[in-house]
Length: 240
Image (cartoon, rainbow, N blue to C red; front, side):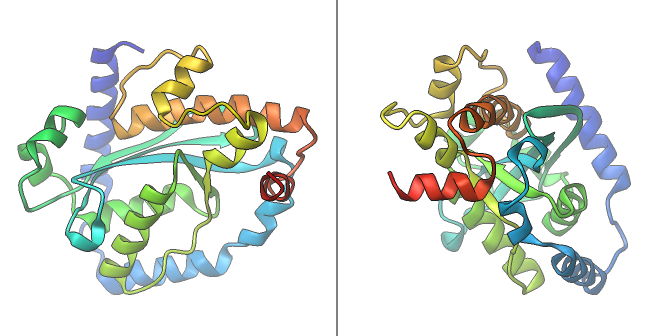
């Protein structure tokens, strides 16, 4: 995917987010939605669903830094849906999130996100509710998920005073059971190792798509070594 068409895609998605967000919806209604969603979730069931049929949302965030408890914030969220190893390329989510303070210059250079874009972006509460509507009951997948997990937990707790209960599956579990001694960490290195073109790196949607490409490959490789469910993956990982 060329850079310019990708940027056009992001602008079109962002436009839909701005016009189709919750707008006037009150915080109490947002909380009610999240509580209802949590009641519908059956996170343990995900452990026993065959990997070939497991529905996940692969996502990535860009942030102002690494420590939400020290004031760093989410700048953008990008995500794409998958069933088993099939990537649903038309089912994508992307939005910037409003941040009051200036973005560190190093983050601007890394992500390409500009301060004026963030000032005009939807409120964090609106974006997170829209994102959870997109995710519904699906498990989440992220590359080195501690970063995403810590920011999502902090943001949901700060904005809605409730815990973040969605399962986030770290790609590292699959990578390590399939290629135990590979010894690489970065997303771009895994892409290079697997001949996946590195396009739109450090854009939340671009990185989510790259992660989905890897998840698709490693799901099949995990099945080839006898892991039919997430529980099988976790059991094998615990024996490494």
